[in-house]
Length: 521
Image (cartoon, rainbow, N blue to C red; front, side, top):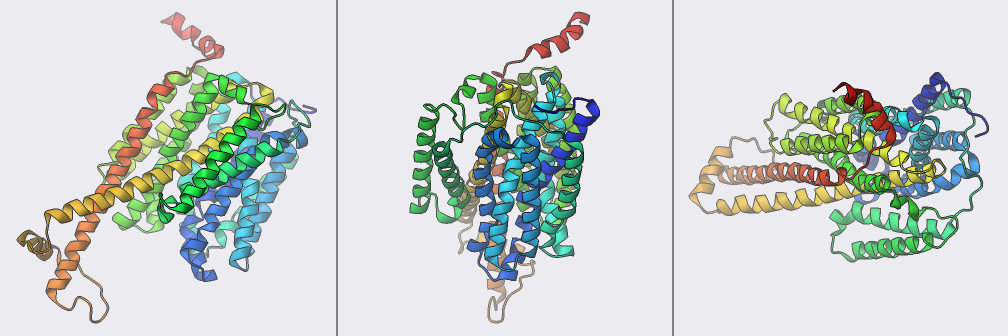
């Protein structure tokens, strides 16, 4: 490091800049979803095409992350972080000004390259500025942006789109990005990586990118294309071949993209696996919950988002506390508490129904938010503290890759599970009420109070209206039961991570920090 200030005010000022940039980058991956129908109407494209606005961002972001470790040795932390933020901000402006569907997708890909580098290099800067004994506190504050952004994205996106237009979800990044860039240029000093001018592992990057792009494409499109389709089989084949070739290259090269010796560090390898579990609990539930609120409970996008705010507030309030605890107590204890709280809250969500009150909606979210915070801060701290300082940029890159892959896995896994459960329950309920039975007729008469909007010539008799209402009610009940099963399934997955948490080892500063308390006891 050629120049590095070490005062507390400087470090926390830099941390604020890093957190704001990270928050923007992650927010943009979720804020877009609610505006996709408006984009479809603006450019006259189909649902299959508009998905590239999100899929392109996901794939480009994943492609940028593995390069962060190498780029820090060439450019330094400050230049890379602010350069990535500049690319992200300018590309956001291009998205807002896009004149065609193709220009929008192109701008989103450029935006994703900036976003993909912001998160891992931000983590590396935090680890570089703070000593191991206080990294938990710092990473807890920084991680607030990671945890809160996905929950706020749909709410903010819905509000901006309804109030202004879909272009505003991109243009809102411009003033925030400009202020963050100016603050970074003024406040941040030059921070260099321990190792300089490392040679790029070109073939390792090519094969890893091939595996990531093919794997994430399969996870994103498996439900639509069919998990047994040739499309998904080809993607899976590319994923397996790319991953095997990547591991083979990394094991025999002098300057690998990923030093496989990192996985000899128990806490780092366990943190990678547990990050996947955490991402399933975070992204899987964030994916299911707003759909349930809107489709099954009838809330608008903004109303659903407001009901998700308590979870975001709980995460934001707990993350700094969890970070402080991570500096003081062994990660095994904290992560077990986090897994149990998150798992129990998701299982509790399995009691939701369309008539659930506000308390039933809010309480599990608060518990889940506290659990995710108690899980994330100790995991990040344990992972970063287990690797040499010179390997932190590389380690942070692959931690973030595991988070993205885990999130995609969680969404795909739970989406597939819930879809199958909805079908199973609908068929089972339907089999109990055969269409010609007296039970079905009674059920149809009871549900015929529902107002059915119809085109002229359709449902022209009271009997057909009643039958249609009955079928709709059966499908509704099947959907509710499918979502309930999905929440419970996600909770069980989180609880399965508890045994792995117990293998995380503590560090000397944990024992030192706890020594007075033990002596007093």
